[in-house]
Image (tube, rainbow, N blue to C red):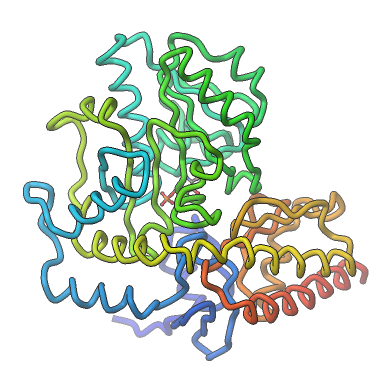
Length: 407
Ligand SMILES: *Cc1c(COP(=O)(O)O)cnc(C)c1O
């Protein structure tokens, strides 16, 4: 076997080119700091895309994972296990849900949710009631069903024929939903804040209206809380802040604090449609994943963590406002809690990736949400000092992008 150096260049050699990662290879992390192969330090505002809600290598998550690793790794769902039962019970006690289904990712949680919504309508109203309504710019994952419910055609193109019976309407437009919904609608699917679509919060009045329209038409309301859930907005789930309760909620990303897990939460009314044998997952409810997730939810669902999210957001917004006062590059800073979107001015539309690369060169990890919006989804316990240090790096990165454009 040839001995290839393990570096960023190897990626292009051996990996399918569906990603184009930044030009460095991180090797370790702690809290909101990360180091690459050359021992360069980075401040992490990306949080593994809203996953590392307790930062990197949180000591209590590490201890929990090690403890479970010495006990039991995997069984399959032919047998149940203690961590899965404990996590399900914790989610039941802390949310609207009565029943939980576990899987391994966000897309799988949504796949389960959409199948359950169809099956519930089929069981209770008949096969005609199968239409799903979702929103433009919405994002629900990359399986064929989830890209089809997602509202960005570019993720679907070339993969057709796509599953049918799916309609999209503009987000935050209740009249458009009213015109589209009917007794054939089995579910309306939405994110409380559209994440990948540009960090666009649902107007609370809109969310309430969606709930009412669903009730009028016996349609289920599905909240995709894969990005907004597990403390991101300062509530355990964003629906708690909106004051609108869904029938099905999907969770992943921060749920495992960095260990892969997904969950679908629902009610006693809806759950029976996933009767024995109707759906499944070999890894779903894996003891390692569930043990870590239980600990992550316990640590996050506390006044110490949730109660400081708004304050940390305020520091982010204050610093972004300062950068904007200097460089005039944002039209708006939006989102909720520690899901933060800064939309670039029209002059910079389409160039989000340039800022991301410039930030990385300065030692800062950030995200984009589409080509026009810089996105931050850091650890919920990021120290204020790391926020301010990171923003000093973003300031430099922005200046460099502007200067490079001027020359
Ligand atoms: C990330 C995300 C998904 C997909 O989750 P995966 O774990 O990547 O499958 C689905 N919905 C929303 C809102 C997301 O942010």
